[in-house]
Image (cartoon, rainbow, N blue to C red):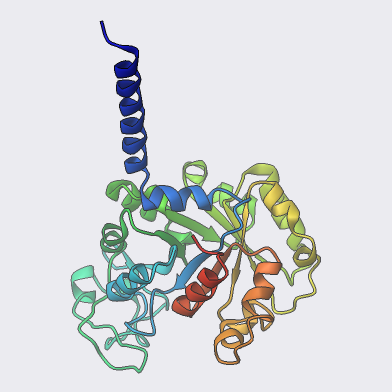
Length: 305
């Protein structure tokens, strides 16, 4: 017969062991996915635009490694396709600007494309080559979320890569197409992916586009772009969170945010009219060209997990 004191000790030990195992099962990706799908969480997620392109070639594995080391939550990258049907990471429709080659990715097989080398921000040729989506997803697996820009023509191919690498929940698919068009083009997978709608607030039907999506599905977020900051959606966007979606705003170029941009924050030292303004207007995901500086700023304000 076990004494009551000993029984209590055993029960306590079992409870603590269970809690420890449970805590160990919660990974960084678990936390990021949970935060992404929680529109009421006011902490700001930081997205590195094309990786850490100031210290490595844009859309390179090294640039993505750097971004992960900084502690970003999401990495944005761009999809393209080779002649032999492999999804690679390339922003432009040609490789002319970012490599020492010329032509479209679709002009080359993957093996041929790998012969070219990426240029850094100064235009100098490096040893880095154009990565495939598979290489990227294996690199980031369990570490960070991925935003698939320029992916709309390649949803099916990207979906298969993500399934094969076990990284489907880490990826955000996006497009500026309206709901009916997306549903018509990808009826088989739309309910199986994490999806974000991109909306130009300067268009008169912007709010209706958002409502159409909300009535038919629940996008994880809405990416709001605007050259002017007079849209009614900016002044009254609580309905977006209330219907289960986060608000994503880009702090890159002024043309995407009416001048409430990274340069205003970093070069001018004016966060009031840049990052603070974006946060005050509902942004809980900010895509930036200054990930290090934005992370430091948010951490000082206890706005980053």
